Length: 359
Image (tube, rainbow, N blue to C red):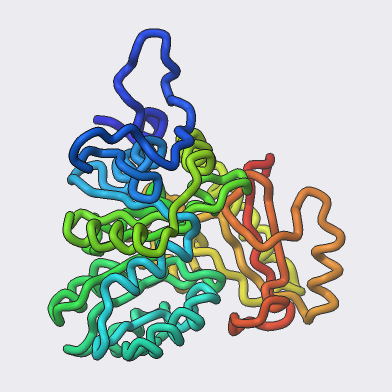
């Protein structure tokens, strides 16, 4: 049986060809030779690219190893999120979104409302989004673990409830990655992620993707990408594919160290509101332990220090941690999340992303 490590190393590679590299280099092409009818796998650069295709096949293997799936890659995570919502929802539909999700969701909600889509929100924790479902719901959007609060919801239970009302279900799987969680196996219709974060893991690529098992849903998302032109560059796609080989190694190391860091922080008197789904006494742990794979609870730890000044002093004193706004990279990062606005967090709230350094 193929495990995560072997799958990640081999996923999406072409059959070996004498004297050719195992992972062919990026294909830079705006157009292709196209005699006769306009058919075939590669016709124009906005439609498809061999480098994307290999990456898409690789991600599909990771997200859905036991069932056929299709992946569509995008220029960013927000490109992927917007493609699902805007390709699936119509005037009069209702979208149910997390109230504690990624900070650009409110801006996207306003865009949906301008198109005549009703938007309801509820927190991730306690499966509260269940109360917002009704027969007008077209799509339920889950983010678990949520960013930055690290709450968790029951994907399978919520998916069953949404499907019973005729709604589709999308899960933002950015923080968990397919090594830590497989939403499609838990009943979701879409697994969506920002590949900018842990998937590529080196802080040098902007990327997003959508994976689904239903070919019609994949076609709708792919059609949206073509229409708005939210395509990744071939170099970014190649770098992402190259990085997938170490994904299980990085996820395992970062998850173990994040749990160790959380264990140290819980003993600090100035730390409050400590959250990490791997802590046995964390409110999210029981649900996370049932759906996140192999004890991999993510690389992010969140906690609150006594005010803005204290938090800034803490961040300034760090020697092995970059003050930066991403997560999931091999270099640890941390930030005072309140500096951006948009998240319901205290001024001293810290989002700490554990890298691959020695614990």
